[in-house]
Image (cartoon, rainbow over the protein chains, first blue to last red):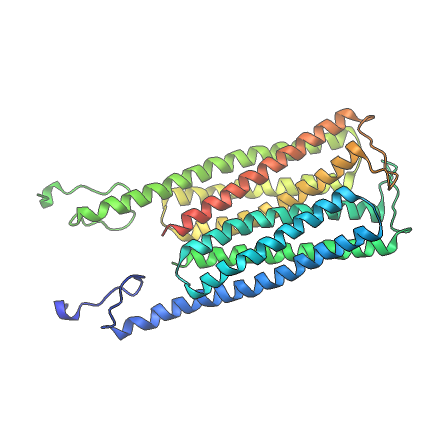
Length: 187
Length: 187
C-alpha cells in the first residue's frame, strides 16, 4: 500500500513541509489559527490590564496628594501597580511575537513566568490596600481603631475605586496565565 | 547487531517501543528523564508547601484562641490557608500521575491553572494579614491608630510567624507554577 513515492509527512511536524502534500496544510493551519487567536486575545487582555493598572496607580496616586495619609502603604501600592503596568507595556512586544509566530514556545513561556510574578506582586498590593481600606471604613473596636471614612469620604471613595481597579487587573492576569498555559499545553 | 532475541525494553517509554530502532530511544529517554525529574521535584515542593500552609493556618488559628482579636481578618486568613493546604493535598495524586506519565500534558496543565488560583488566594491572604500585623506593630499616627504589640507581644509574635509561613508558601507556589510551565514548554 505504502510505496516510497506516496509517503506522507506527519501533520504535526513544525519542521519542513515541502509543499508536495497540500492535505497537510489544513490541520497545521487550524492549529496555528487556534494559537494565533489565543495570542491576539492575550494582546487585547494585556492592553486592558495596562489600562486598569494605570487607573489604579493614578487614582491612588492622586488621592495621596489630596490627603497626606497612610503614606507608606499607599506608596507601596502605587509603586507596585506602576511596576505591573510598566511590565505589561514591556511585555507587549513579546505578545506580538507570539501572534506572529504562534508555534514558538519561548516567548509564551517567558510571558507565563513573568505574568505569574506580576500577578503575585499585584495581588499582594491589592490585598494589603484592601485590608487598610476596610479598616478605614469599619475600624476595629477591640484595638480602639476608629473608622475614618466619615471624616474623609472623598478620600475613601477614591482609594476604594483604586483597590477595585487593582483587583480587576488581578483577574485579567489570572486569565493571561491560564491562556498561556492552554496555548503551551496544545502542542 | 540487534537480533530479535536480544531486544531490550525501553525503561521510560509508556507507549510502544518495538525495539527495532534503538537510536530513537536515547533522546526520548533523556527527555522523559528530565520531565520525570521535574515531576518528582514538583511532588516534593508540594509536600513542603502543605507543611508551611498548615503551619500558617494552625499558628494563626491557635493565636486566635488566645486573644479574641481581629477575628474577621484572621478567620479569612485561616480559611484561605486551609483551602490552599487542602487543595495541595488533593493535588498530590495529579502530581503522582505526572511522575508516572511524564509526557501527559493534561495533569500538568490542570495543576498549573489550579496552582495559579491557589497562589492568588494565598498571596491575598498573606498580604492582607501582613498589612494588619504591620499596623499592629507600628500603628498609624495620622489615623490615631495606636500600636498594640506592646501589650500583646505574644499574640503579635505568633501572628507574624504565621504571616512569614504563608509567604514561604507563596514562594513555593510560584516555583511550582514556573516548574509546570517549563515542563509544558519542553515538548
